[in-house]
Image 1: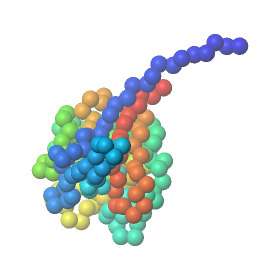
Image 2 (image 1 turned 45 degrees about the vertical axis):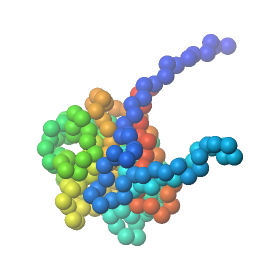
Image 3 (image 1 turned 180 degrees about the vertical axis):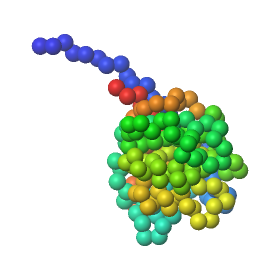
Image 4 (image 1 turned 90 degrees about the vertical axis):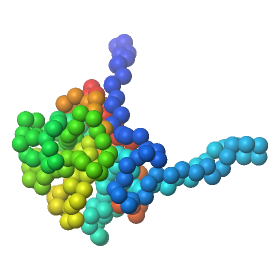
Length: 215
């Protein structure tokens, strides 16, 4: 009988920002708040908090419903795009708009998921960030990907009213993760785990996004 083999644990990267009262949200959106509802004390055996937040707080998955009435809520989408092999592509310092030439160096044999690192230190601020050009999303769609993620608050600029990049995602059936933290992640291939909650009528869901070293 062969001897058992113990494999070393695969390294994990937590690519989710902290969620608390300091978490940035789109101007005017619901900010995070937390209030103790049940308090651990004589006669009560537990602490239970009531939490209020936008579903776009922290690392989150947008549903098609977010930008198109009648489309799927986050509780209705297929989970497969949020779990599996992915590639982190560095596009650091590419400016306000991520163009096809910024990712051209890393497109060979793409897995089904792509995470775009645009900054050395990720920020959730809506004041200045890199968005993704429609042409870049169209190019990635030709590579048969299922999901893109980015370390900024949105794939569209903060001032956009018609959200062309979000609608490009919809046109190609792509899922998206926003507000990731990729500061310590080298360019390369990983396993992504970033499942949204089954919020059956919601337009988005927070995720606890992690990367795991490939075996």
